[in-house]
Image (cartoon, rainbow, N blue to C red):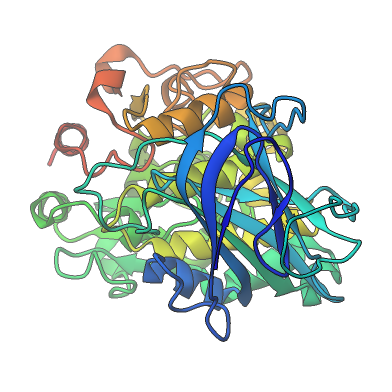
Length: 495
């Protein structure tokens, strides 16, 4: 069954559980059937999202597709609906979840940009009177404000990603059991247990034949002791093999040959614990008596782990750090890690990887969904791994007080501006508040990797850094797939 939206803002019921109020927007709403179990087989959904939802025990309640969307200037202006960042919005009214469950909503626009939406704390407003036709939502509803803008579909060649239903808006109302999210110590305890099970610590050797596999051979520490080795440290939400997805084999082979096979990767939790915890585990995992002589290649938050390891030089362990290559590392932090912008943080991460369809995005999405669940239950304290990236936050202040550093430091950074209209509109609306018009790569300020912060300036000079300008189109997740970036990394490391 299809239902026409009312551009004058009259509420229209499109299912027993969903009413849409769409001032200034024409379109046809269609309720799509959610499969039993609420996960697999959603219309237009790529398996990565289905698998990530399933793994996080999230069920789909309703799927609404809005087709033939068209903005109508001047219509419905009296309602004054505004989305999270003040842009024009449509309102989605949804039946609240049953006792013991929570709920949030995923929105995909016509171009494939995905955003996560949450009801306000204690939201139980009355349903709009006079909603047209079918069913009865009842007196209590959850309301979500969704951006109204209509954008062109993404280019035709982009046919695979998290979603493939381009050219329409898709609303997915999902729910999950609250269960253990709020017991014991709340967010950090729940997320810590989840990461311990699903993102455990591991040290592995990286070879040209195994770098795309989730596991690899154990390091031969006796062979590495006293010899220059390369340590790879991944960023938030990912694993080492995910970060290397777009690295061609010849790039990995160059690094492998340069270090005579002594290339290691640290897989580690990134959300619930800070880099101090990551380094404590690493040092405990390396046998006593081993002399570490390391270069480090680190991506995003991995740069903070690398700096924390370099600070251990001169301590009780025999550690020497020669070079660190920072790839988009938040050395001055990122404002998106601030709890005020955590919704924007997961929105931005989702769209970074959505636009890389060949990436194993399930791993990233599972972690993002975990944070979404915590936002939904208003339990955000204790996400120490994310909070370590807050500009001038406690972790960065502590790191600034430590003296150890590498002999040489290099940095890759980017000033990124999307060219696709949908992603450009998202960046303009959603990220401008957090970044205050500061140049960024969609997650980290452009200067953060090489200038450091007011409390801990490096700086990394122009001769030891490469900064991509807007014309080169390198976003936060796109450095390793860029040939110029790979060439710089290899050159800096002597490969």
